[in-house]
Length: 278
Ligand code: AMP
Image (cartoon, rainbow, N blue to C red; front, side, top):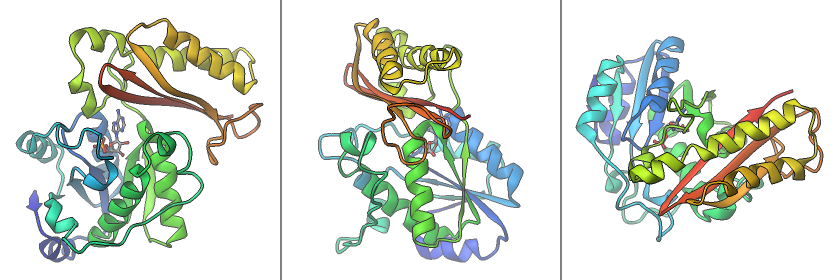
């Protein structure tokens, strides 16, 4: 496995591989990340991962400086999965002092995570565009866990004609339903016990849909009601939205529905979702 820190060296190494799958990450890897690596390995002749805690997708008051990191452990996990190439650039390599160009995706960035985290998707689109340009993968793998991010990245790739196929892998969960996330490391044991309420809210609402409920507001009310049963959970938003446009639905129709939520537990902000397809 080649571990590469500079753009020049990455471009030279890339030229030695044919079809390449890329898994972009911010590190502190868990089974969710590794599931995407396995998808890439199964699909592509060579696999690359990137580890970069991208400062432009964090607002000033967010957790950039305390975001968990463990590069040595990440590299040994990737090595064990048979990854060929790992890109671990510094912040100065990706954002030199005179950096001034950003990618702004319209429409689907306005709501949900975009409304809650104003610069977030501008940072995500910019770094993913840079990684695609530098690494030139044939396919790139993203997790359903960050549902809006998958929609934003697909839209960017299409609008900018980037020759990369965006592949979405399913959300990997702990046995109690909590979606795996590097941020779960912030939770105290009491908070960790409360955290499965996100998945409970989603699955309870999914059952209401399965039992015939098609009213968007009723589904959002179910999400809110289940979250209200957990005193440590402070909901930021709940949503029952069109899976493509992310607009809140009055009535669920033939496109199905993306149920999603963002919840604070103490200082930690957790997100999760379930996509119901028809
Ligand atoms: P991150 O390191 O949090 O930026 O995540 C890197 C990639 O892994 C993103 O495409 C995430 O959506 C994906 N990912 C994170 N958590 C999970 C999970 N629990 N299941 C599947 N994919 C995940």
